[in-house]
Image 1 (cartoon, rainbow, N blue to C red):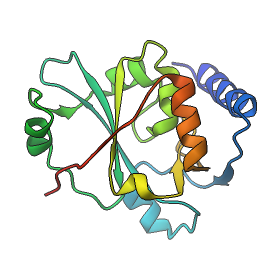
Image 2: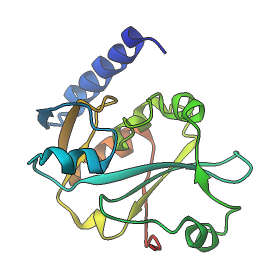
Image 3: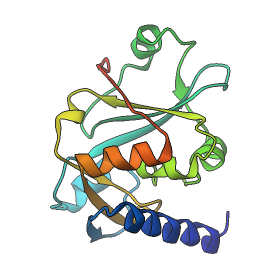
Length: 171
């Protein structure tokens, strides 16, 4: 995927937000590949920080975008059992590009805009879903956009991704 194609997707995201009348708070910062990177920079941004995990089942047939609080340590084995799935694991960067159209370190709830076939199931940890504002990378990890919960819900509805709010087992 070329930089030009990726930046065009960002324009599409911005146009979608305009169409849906979604206002965001935008922050620019050095690239953040992990939640720890943000901690190291001591960034002060509105909204709840999110750890975004792109998962696949053992057979690679089902894909999941799991949103949890930034400090959460997910027990994938227990989550697999809870959801009655074959072993869950992290999806490859190739699968990430194919299904969500982003690179590692750039995953967020907004990437479901690129999942036009609705191949990815969105799971949101129940404690996270209580927040009123959510931090999301807009396909690139050198920006953070903060959305209100109602706007994020409207975005999910627009993309035809109804999030499943679940209690995610932690280590």
